[in-house]
Every structure is written in C-alpha cells, then in structure tokens.
Amino acid sequence: MLAMHLALHGAFLIGLADRHLYTSGARLLEESLRISGRPAGYDDLCRLVMEGTLANSSQVVAACEAFWGGVERWSAARGIPLEEPRRIPF
Image (cartoon, rainbow, N blue to C red; front, side):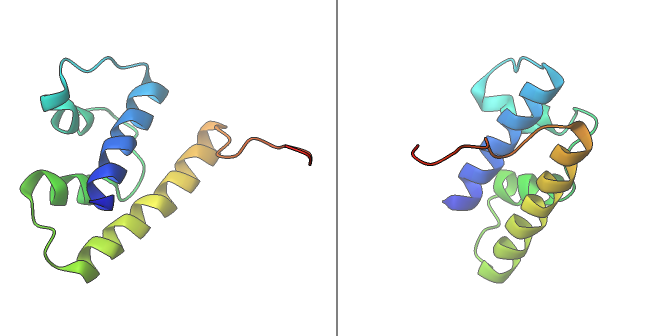
C-alpha cells in the first residue's frame, strides 16, 4: 500500500514541478512516465505499481528507497526544498 501511495505522490510531485495537468486520475501514473526529468527510481516504482507486481517485498522496498534517493537528488538539482526550516516552538 505504501508503494502505491509513494508512486501516486511521486506523480503529483513530478506534475507540480513540471506544471503538468493530468487528464484523469486513471491515467495519472501512465502520463507521469511521459514527463521528462523524472527523479531516478520513479519509473521502476511506477511500473511495479501499474503492473501490480508487489508480491516481492524486497524488490518493492528497494524500488521505494531508490525512488526516495532519486527525489532527494532531483529536488536538490531543481532547488526544491524538501523541508521547511522552522524554529522551535512550531
């Protein structure tokens, strides 16, 4: 379930960064694969989710971690902060 949510939110992130409007929720993942400049690891995770091949937990965990590492590098290269700096108290 987490892999599916991660792929979905990855598509949202990619669409926002590219200012892309998806045509429908049903085609969101498919369309996200056509946007250039995706984070490393996204394609593999997205395809696992789209194909429903999530039974191998080691493969799914590796895909999720590869995608998150790709997001960190991708966001840094684009100047997109992942965390909002805050001072305590919140």
